[in-house]
Length: 130
Image (cartoon, rainbow, N blue to C red; front, top):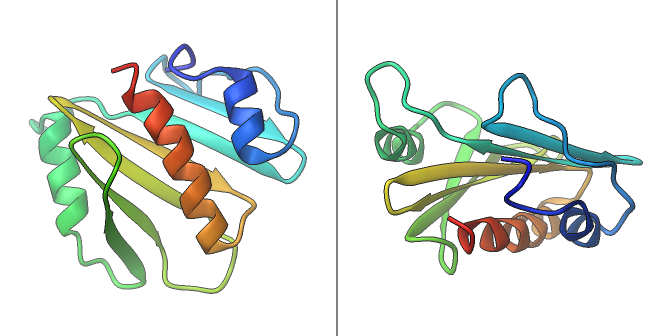
């Protein structure tokens, strides 16, 4: 996952200097961090008998209390934002399906509207390499 987007691309999107991407527990995930802001990328893997696309679809249809999913265009074949229904800066995810692949970028340290644009920029970069 760390090879799908560069340190410079993440730093530009987050508007701060970030460290090199490092895997989070497995090669299908990566995190970049800087002062007060960070981004994670997770390539969704088959699990529990579900393909990455099935996991994408299940997440999109989720109705967990306090969690908002919101469709977004212009990224991959289909995409949606996912975030908590609060005013807190608790992070925002953008989950993308492209072909048989699905991935999520989460960004932290931004107000909601800014987080959406940052996540979309990063996801468009990753989608262009898948």
